[in-house]
Length: 236
Image 1 (cartoon, rainbow, N blue to C red):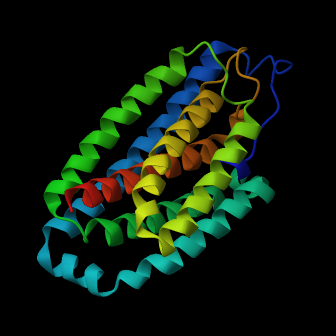
Image 2: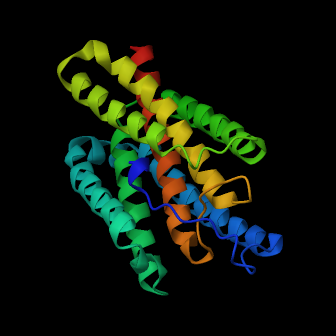
Image 3: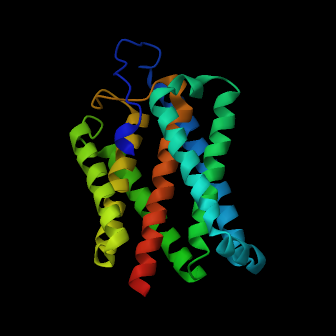
């Protein structure tokens, strides 16, 4: 969850990272990594949705998403408690590759359950919403990176609604709609931590570009995950 992600102190005393040119290079590096990861995941998902043999394979072996979820949870724990691992030159890229692979499996196992029309619709909605959130995070005069209490409450509420949705179907649409809102807020928080600046209390360190990319990538994937399920539920 977003409330468990590492939060870095403000680097006003770091003259190197305070340089706008250095920050721009950091932002460019993070967004480029996220874009490449999203492109790979989208290509894999589209291939599996459009090709019937692959589509039937993942429909039959849907439980492949379970170990993927477990690995993602372990990786999140590592991002919180062992963040230095994501600064080791070779290891950080290996961890990133595993993280992207698990998210790709998770998205594929979900997408093959829906008609390609709904997948394309959810993809378009997610893309448009992410663009809007990027613009909002960049130009918003308010700082969301210091709203730890709000993020924690949102995360706990999302978990509770998810549990209720398992036992009561009427809660599912509320859970999915709230999930879209929650991950939209998470995206704004992560973007502001990546962009940095004096108005943002918390920001990623220059050496944490892999952590920043993984956090933003995860938020976008799960935003799509909630939107696709919401579209499917409404279509039903």
